[in-house]
Every structure is written in C-alpha cells, then in structure tokens.
Length: 212
Image (tube, rainbow, N blue to C red):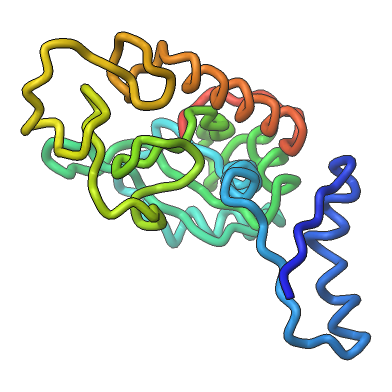
C-alpha cells in the first residue's frame, strides 16, 4: 500500500505536497498520507527561517511577534539564540515564518519595532550530507539504522573507534586511506553534490547568508 511519487519539476512537487492529499481524501481515501523525504523537508523548512541581528536584549519575543503581525507577516516561532558556553542570550533572533513568501518579505524589509530597525538574513541551506554514526553510511541517522553493531570510523571494523587498534585508516565507504567521516572522501563529496542539486531544485531563489 505504499507508493513512491517522483515529481518531474518543482511545480508538480508542490502540487503533490499541498493539494494531492486533500484531493484523494475528498474522493473518500481518508487514510492516505503524504511523507516528504527528509532531505527535501529540511530544504523546505529552512526556507521559512530568518535571523534578525543585533536585537536589543530588552525586547521580548512576544513584542517581536506583535511587530511581525502588525506588518502582516505570519510567524510560527520566535527564539532568541544563546551562547554555547554559558547559555547567555545574544542579539540574534531566529524567526520561523509561515511560508517562504513571508520569510523573503521580512528579509527585504528588515524587522521594524516601533522606531527601531534590525537587519534580517535568510537562513542558509545546509548541504552537508546526513551521515549515520552507527554504520557510517549516508542518508539516514543512527536512530533509523538497521546495523546493530557500531562500525569504526577509523578502520571500518565492528567496534567503537576508541577501541580501534589499527595502524592505518581505511574508509568503510570508499576503502580510501582516510577516516569514514572525512569531508575529503569521494562518497562524502558525491552526497554533498547531490544535496546542492536538491537545494537548487527545490528551494526558492533568494540571498542566503546565515547557517541554519
């Protein structure tokens, strides 16, 4: 009862994502659900995110939501980022809008609160491949891995890396003389190129300059 649907273009993909499920439910097939591949969903989610910079610490998140609503911009979440070392609040606000159109408008206009103006940057698409640290393969995470024994990132054998006694590195994915987590691995580079292709295919063309 499971079908894989491959869209030929972005317009078809959006129709499947936004309208197809409602259409088949209207025809009486109420149990049907659409699941978007994780890699594509990550791209679509990132398109809704923006970062407001140098926002005064005294301004609460609730006031930012109000200011966005006053401008007709619908946001689902506003979060002030904190420092990694001591969890102190910073001047950067992560804003998740309802859709890419709202996000792109905010990037162009900036965040305006009363007489104050704060620059806004779109979240940058992450093209780093997803790699499982259980089996070291790509396109899934350890939570969904079928391997029961952890693979060594140094030699590829069935043990944890801190238990490895191998003298030389051997990549489990390409058999090269490097660790399986190396960003110079040909398999890693292939997956990174694939992610860039997905971003180019499914993301809205806009200026992006901040890591999500």
